[in-house]
Length: 455
Image (cartoon, rainbow, N blue to C red; front, side):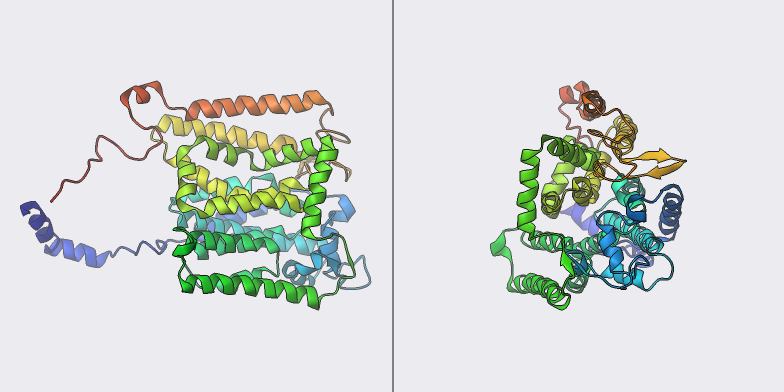
């Protein structure tokens, strides 16, 4: 009792009171105030460099396979009509509408919007990583990792007429509002439905976070909030389908597409192998790191919403044939989990070795299957372009830039296995730590963290 009285007395000393008054600590529920000017300039410079070194797909004069339908909605100079709706692309209005108001060729207009959208998405991802409790250097490292993925900004610049970049900006902003418990989420999600339907993943994450103690723990206010947001999103989508009669439709119902994709994978072994390779290369390093790092898995289990996010993003692969582009939606959250697990490794040498091996593994996962170079410029990503285009980097059948045989696939498997073995060796607990009974992946220090004494 005497020590407790002494501690309470020390808190009222003049110097302690003055220090506390001059430098108040922010509440735990808010982000620490910091300047985002330097990260914003760094990400703008990175996007400008990628703009310069990334080529444009030669397929359909830069419009791409699905991108041609978005271009037809944005006053494409190749068509007499300024707006030709094609379902289901005509229900994703925001990016084509913004492109229609800009001057110049349609490919350039979409490319400019995608570059600006990815700059904003990287900045929002930086804020999201900080919101998840990581440091500023960790946020910069996570954004650099995301920006150098083949299906990140490079894909948005290589296939400029796609609408994915602005979707990532909405997803990251929605997750930030979700973690801040902001009511603005109820306005963001219905607006984001005008961009792409995948924004409903954020709504599912919000429901998962609110129901952390079970569905019975939801209050009436939480039930009304989530039900109202879902109804608003569905009302926006229904209004779009009623208001925009499509000129023609290219896809049946989603469940019919999913069944067709599964049937195609069952009947065509080549397509099945190609799909598996596309998924592995798209989520490769973050998925391996999360499986190997116990603290990364612990963070996902504790927060709950990352598990729901990754699971729903994985289901999106049934929505089409381009598996890598669809499954890439899970990569940002896996990157955050990977950073949590890596930063909680207590051994500095292991962290350094792991970072070096991760860089090599990241380069391996991105360069061989996704990127190729022609005339000093990047042509990417092409793992899903096996049957179309003139620059298809086909790993199973031509035309391609690698020999098309089973030895190529074996080389991929052996190289990936070697790097994953090195990664597992770096993550394995050391024998000294096991003999001493110390948990290598724990942030607790048994030498200094002693249990509090009873008063």
